[in-house]
Amino acid sequence: MTKLDTKNDVEESNRMWASASFVGVLIIIGLPLWWKTTEVYRVALPYDKISSFDALPHSIASEVKVLANDEATAAEISGLIEKAFEDSELINLKVTKAVLSDDLHHTLNSVADEQEAVEEVAGRLALSAHNQLLLVQRTPLFQDCWLAQERLAFFRDATAAPTIVQVLKQWVYQTKVLAGVRTEVADAARRTRFPPGDRYHVVLSVVQPRPGSIAVEFDAKEAVEDYIGSFVDELSVLHNFTLKSQWLYLLDFDFQAREVKDNSEWGRHWAVRQDRLPLLLTRLEERAATHVSEAPTINLALYATPCERAPLVIYDHDDKPIISSVEAFMSPKWGGVVLSSPTAGECRGQHQTHKPVTRVVMGAFVSQLRKLLGIVETEHIQGAHLEPLRSVVPRRWELDNLLHLRTIELITSAERTLQSLAQLLGEISNIVINDDVGASINLAVDSIHQASALMAQGRLVEAYKTSQQAFQAAETAFMEPSLLALLYFPDDQKYAIYIPLFLPIMFPVVLSLKNLLLWFRGKPIHKKMD
Image (tube, rainbow, N blue to C red; front, side, top):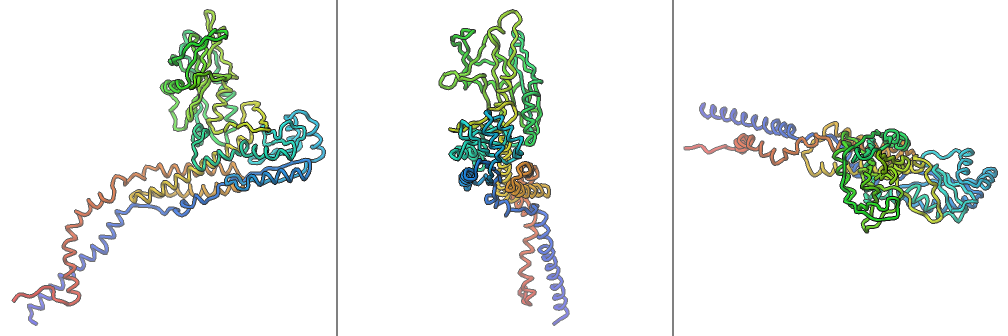
């Protein structure tokens, strides 16, 4: 071998080692570094737990204690109740039984009034706390079952068992409504009540369309505090309420009412069709200024009808008057309106003044507010009697049922939000999940499992508060703006930008790989020319 050949071999070796170094740096360091710096950051998420939500139990442990005059009646009643609820997926009912003491037995049979009997039971027995109900036998009942405002019900004898089961299912626990929450059935109650939230604004607006023609005397502030305030105070465990009142003047509305002759003091009334009334809400929305907060607003409007269009009577779609003690209507998830017409006497004389009856008007508003917040109206049950409300305060078992409803509603909403987010992450690969979003998702998942465990233990208030935490964390994660950070930069655009950058570099690298492989194998790289 000549000195020239040796020099050429050394140069060839240096050139090959330089090429190998360049390829090594590019492939071993460059490509991984590019891949790492362009990957979408995602924290580890509990996909297994999210996918197993459907198998998670959602039953609420509740307790019913049967107190009868004898052991046989107590056993028969409790046995039928247990059988009726044994297949329920949302109510895990624990039924206990006992025999009434002779003294209490004699007292319940001697008192004539059911309310007095309730007081006797309350004085001798501790009335049940949240999620518990006392069923007490009282022989002199005129009905099979009598349900009090407290967590207490009376039954007459063992033959009342089927009625008791109906009362528990339709009134106390409302199993169909709870099942509708899980299946997202759009029943009337679901369409009416406001979505779950930790706080609400309640705004009472007194609408006086023509203040120059008739004065309206109505203390809106005091009415809100006395009636609405007393009602929502009982719901403080569920929501925080902010109460407001305002007056709106010169907000006239053309009801397109037609005059109908009658035998009243007026000699006529003005008929307004029911389908015309929702248009009034648009006018109210323009002036009410209730959308000043992120919290949902429940609107209550008292519309004082002018004398020339009084009294207003609401007619249904069949052009028949709707028989009611007060002319009012409600808009689902918005609020309610009461149409207050002056009397004929108030419209006589030079100084006309309309004084709405506060008790009637606010009673209508409280009735509307009950439905808007989720308290479902009870249906008639043959042989059963429901004690009428004695004040604006909701019944104790209604509060329990509302806690049931809202807890399951919050958990269901949180579960579906997380499942939708997990599905979205699987379909769109370049959604960023940063540490804050990951923390919110993990908190929501843990809170859902914790709330389910608390429901199974019957700790209703704690389960509700934990479900609120799960709902808020899931909503925070789903609505996080950082999820949209890379949606405008999909993978095809990423490759379209980087390929023109790397392709000119990769051509000589790829072409030199063949020569490198031949050189490493000791084979000639090219044929020498003669």
